[in-house]
Length: 221
Ligand code: SF4
Image (cartoon, rainbow, N blue to C red; front, side, top):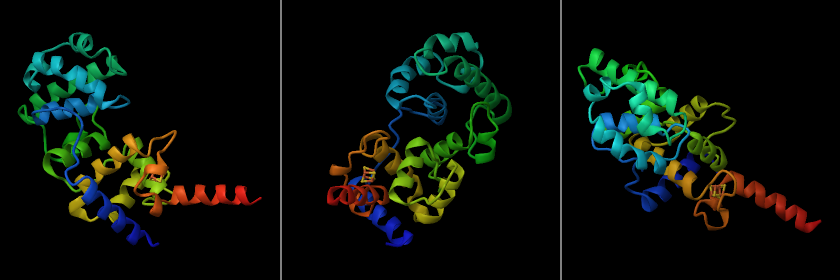
């Protein structure tokens, strides 16, 4: 199977299985999404969704959060991973959004990445989810699933994976494909014990066929 055929098969499957895949983070405004994505680094979406209602009630806009102190934010988000750093980043990014962007989350990827606590992945997630930007944010799930399926080859960094996925998927499907790979990694192709026996992609998966071959050899010995 060529890489092109592999991408086509993956697109075909997910277009039927998850035609409307979307973020599992809860948000109502661009600012809320940005805050939720910053909070979700090294933390589950479920935990973030338990925390953000109180945070957004107290600080619904960049203007409101810009007036808070990191300690006040910390008190609300302390059950999330790295609460000290994230509290500092949220206050700093809210102040930056107010001072440099008139209180609105910037659309431009570079401007987003210039905000405190916002890296390439966060900027790409926000751009893809809010504005349908044709980019592929690569988190730990996307990195793993892409490698196992054979969509990425010898990619040692998230950036290398990002480039290969952006080249392989149809451009207009990239915002959806990002959610496909995350959700597949979260619920089926899990890090420790992937559910290969029930995975609909096992027939085209490089990782699974390699494993199968190994097991078959051992059984024949
Ligand atoms: S067959 Fe297994 S390793 Fe391959 S994508 Fe499915 S769950 Fe992941």
